[in-house]
Image (cartoon, rainbow, N blue to C red; front, top):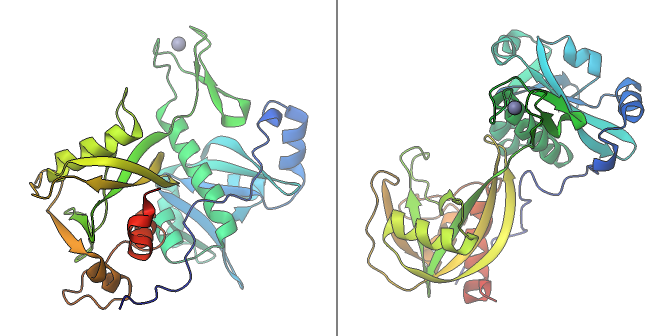
Length: 315
Ligand SMILES: [Zn+2]
């Protein structure tokens, strides 16, 4: 009998509490009023690191605007949206100066993966932090015009960069990644990359290429990485993945071949696992101590849905 996997955990970085109010992004009076109202509404991010204040109630990632600016030399400030009536902003700190902040006893400075995996902040902060990190990472890499090479200027409270020389407008990008579980009846295909923690196996994944549908990307990546042919592809869910600015698009796919050929450039190994065996990975009872990714990752949810619903994941 399959074990009961318990209540469904939250999928990290999703279900943002923020209203993005895109129509207010060029309203300078509104933005100034939001920034000046003295509330703690600013996330401070330096490269991969998020700065948080230590409080009696645990780490708090929100600063007053002037507190955030006093932490380290800063670059762009972006408007993320409204939490109720309070503005939320992200400010980019110099990454090297942010590393030095780890020395301060009143601050906790760590990366956004650790914050999510360890549950260091409430779920209400995770999606806004992901939004801030991805948007600020885009600014850090797009200070010059891709069309003519001249420096560009931030506008629309961070949602656009404009080139004063050639007038081209540049918008923040999101890189789509297909992440999928190939299924052959009562078994599924999991892979292991060398960078994974020991004994962890997961879904296969890869960037969707220009001119490619999600379904085609799922079939191509599964064929390239494991030599498995897939037919039907069913969308499951998506997740912002701000490392640095991806969108994970989760799918289930019906395998139509079974002989695995592993691409050793991409994967250490790939194997078929039975549904009963995968269920044991969720409860930590797998005989080879094999585990799957934590609930923060969409892979966990894609795999769990199949363990619980079997062929029901296909419409
Ligand atoms: Zn230009």
